[in-house]
Every structure is written in structure tokens, then in C-alpha cells.
Image 1: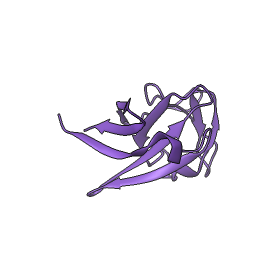
Image 2: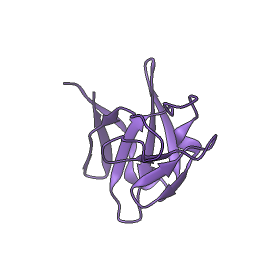
Image 3: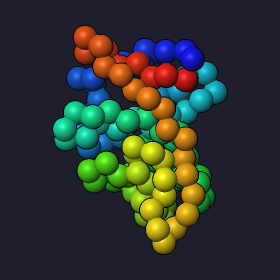
Image 4: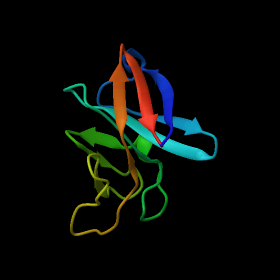
Length: 101
């Protein structure tokens, strides 16, 4: 498993998404109000919406295209919709963010 530095926590605004590219992989990063940081693949399973542009509420992001609700912890789309996005573990060390691929 590779651990890749993706920036600093102070560069990631709270309750807003940020798109990060690592090679061909595109991730959506989110920092909650409690300073938890999540990374998920940046495509909604419904119509490929850019999740980094979605609205964040607690530990969920709402797809900007059709308002699908995705859990940032496990990637599960919430009922009545169905689907899942891949999640990636993020760690913070001395203010630096790392994602495990």
C-alpha cells in the first residue's frame, strides 16, 4: 500500500470539497467541522457527478447533479438511492495530509 502526501490540513477548508489528482486517480477530499478528513473517488455512481463540488453536511456529501447522499466514512449511497464510491484512508502527520492507495 502506497502512502502519498496530498497537501496540508490548513489548505483544506472545512465543509468544502477539494479535487486532488494522483496520476490518473481523481479524489475528492473533505474536512469536516470536527477536523476529520475523508477521501473518496470523485465520481458519483449515478451520473458521474463531481463530488468535490457537492454540499457537505456532517459526514455526508450531496452530489451536485442529482442530490444523491454519499457517506464519507464508507462510501455508501444513502437510501432510497443505491451505490457506492471507493474510499481512501487519510492520515494527518505534523499538519501534512497523506492518502493510502
